[in-house]
Image (tube, rainbow, N blue to C red; front, side):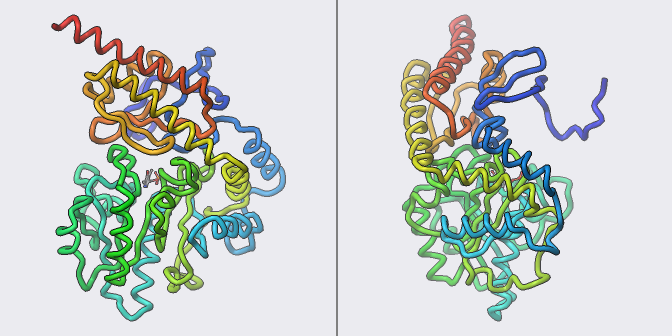
Length: 396
Ligand SMILES: *Cc1c(COP(=O)(O)O)cnc(C)c1O
């Protein structure tokens, strides 16, 4: 039977009927260990009782009212983010791309109301991924995603990360902001060194530019801090978040200082669904857990444990695992075999991992992962690797 869905995805021939923590279960009862977490979305795993409770409790009261009315849950969640981060104000939306669109608009408006409407250009970095809307595609700069979709949205310049001469050369009188992922996710779990982030902050300050952090994938505890930039000691002016922020409920947010957001007055931006009561109930419930006593330390600890075990695995299978990248529970394995083949081999041993650019598979388990599940995942990675070693052995 041909599918009625637009064929923009090559889907694995696998469907799940329910989930429990780090496990996904098929209709037939087969259990898969989920080290993809819906691409870093199910931050608290599947069917977390606190999230299920918050969602169902809210679902029985009110789902949606529109932003024409006050939404107490949103006021509370915004306040909590303001207290926990550099930001003073928050705009809630439905996805990472929308959060980045808001970030771009806030940065342009900041300069426009400051008397410099000509400062609208945003500098981004090679290998970036910022979303699939027309502007965020232009920001990401990947030709393969823009092909056939008409002229590239104007106003984005891209340089290689770490190429300081190229960066200085591209910054001009029209530049409004720099936009960067502290760890490139889709691009292949490429960590931007903390010293480089500090240097970018200094360049922004010296040139009157705003610094936008795309923390859509790195945020909400993924690296062991609420947001990954905290490790570097600097703060952005504007930041996008999404993926884990709703624990599986579609939700995004753009956070900013009051100064950076000075142009965003009534009517300048909007959303029908963003920040609705259902999303805000779940968002608050996610924060209850992530900001709970010891939670982020546990994420950092689990990340170190996993990384140590992966290092031993790499030593045993150097032809399959070439390099380990990432921080906390956002880890990438650079492979010596094709990443999509490896992901399929892992799936055969009931482990879910996610391919990324640069021949990487990403390990993005729920942040609630335990030591036993880490052991089980490493065993399954080893079993998948052995399949490739067997093929190699036969060919030699
Ligand atoms: C996933 C992702 C996006 C896009 O988020 P959507 O919710 O798919 O729009 C943007 N930036 C980064 C860093 C991402 O990982």
